[in-house]
Length: 428
Image (cartoon, rainbow, N blue to C red):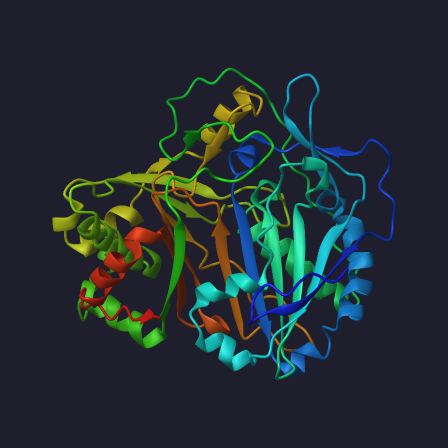
């Protein structure tokens, strides 16, 4: 099937499906946990850029042949969502409908794509969501795009209800790389079984209940959201640390890079919003369980609260983020579980949200002995309070920071970042 040209940068779309080499037994289902259901209105969009040398091992036929074997162990992603007739709780009917595979091309070179603002990378991964017809909506899509220079990108569109960024990248996508080299696909990890109980904890602050969306699973925003990116080199990060911590910081006062970046941005947002500064923020970090042990939403979710954020020292804000003590992922899962998935919630953008993907193995994929030259993950379905996503920079060096905010606030936030005098260079 050939789709109409939609954008001058990417065109020539061809749509097909790719499935498993083995039929899944009849009546096989996957029931998402409460934590999974809390993330159902969010989507991960990952784009992997490969050089022309690496692209030699990433032809469409080669990838599809490998997927035929690889997806035998990933039968959950090939199914479609349904609702329980008795409770309405969503589940996956593993009926081998397949994952969508999109082919496209671009007249730009790999280098030209990497010189553009990272927000434009959204054109290289499908933005399809679940619904409004659940049985026609694939939870996973791939987009293979050939560049003018011979390089390629592979875009992964992943429904967050299936798992967090570590599950999507480290276990799922990197597993394709291992299968390409001839290794047997790893067995799919076990997932936690739902345990419906009466909720007994205080309501989690990181979770926001939204109006029912029915079977059209997308965050109901009041504002149009926009993404822009910061590319921070190792030199810039060193300068930031020197600015905030001094020449010879006390080891007892050491603050990780992620918290330093987020402390600065938190204050910039507070100054930009003037009078409605975000006093409560959410932090999402990598869970303690490795993705190969349990595949799902295992991220650690915390909240931190502060007053007079605009007037605080960014170092103090960063220290508060680093010393966070409120962990809510268990309460979130239990609350959604207690309702049997009847309500709709969001996490990203419920409060101003900082997401730490620094330790995600985004560069673990190899083709022809070459790793991606750049990997860019973003989130679709962020709430109006906004989100900041911190991940490894190009070639795994420095940091790539994606900032997702209401469109009307972007210019003001960029202005605050520019005049902050902390070596945060905005990639326009």
